[in-house]
Image 1 (cartoon, helix red, strand yellow):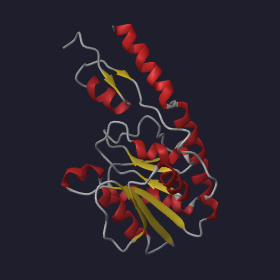
Image 2 (cartoon, one colour):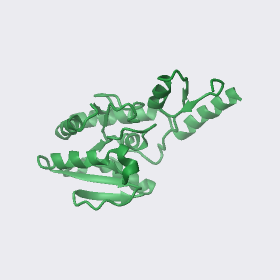
Image 3 (cartoon, rainbow, N blue to C red):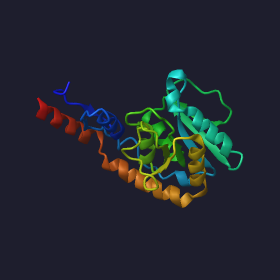
Image 4 (cartoon, one colour):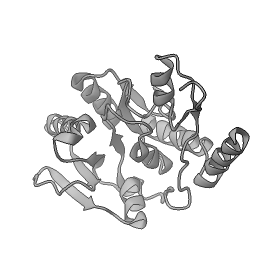
Length: 218
């Protein structure tokens, strides 16, 4: 109904509704800046660590976890790299994983992000994708795609705050290889990425925006 105002949590959802001539207001959930932050331990890595979110089951196909595995399997032949993942859906039985954490607590998750040199985000059906933004808060550069519903448009700007590949596996692998080979670019994107996510506000700030909006519409 036209008399009902719509609230969305991301640019991609805003744009999706816009296609149907439906106006909405973006209110993001905000981030836990006190839980996810740089620990400055990444420079101690002896190998380039690739990080990603593990999802299991046919209902999670849009997360495209298989892209992460395929990217790693292709590049490990050429480079001395490791694959680290965490998730809530099952436990992967794969020898290619160097580390896996199921349902990590905030402290463990922060340490996990801080060890990753590159974060892979191939998902194609999200509102606002949380994990890549959290990785960015630790200065970990992110690779996403230009899929319409990647859920990363709010913070991922190609070659500024991260890398955005075309929506195919070949280009996704190409972007990953580029970051493996360019430490300076990883540092630049990591710093810019953290600043971008910080600019989107914490939970308190964004909930205050929601309260103000609801008060105006009451």
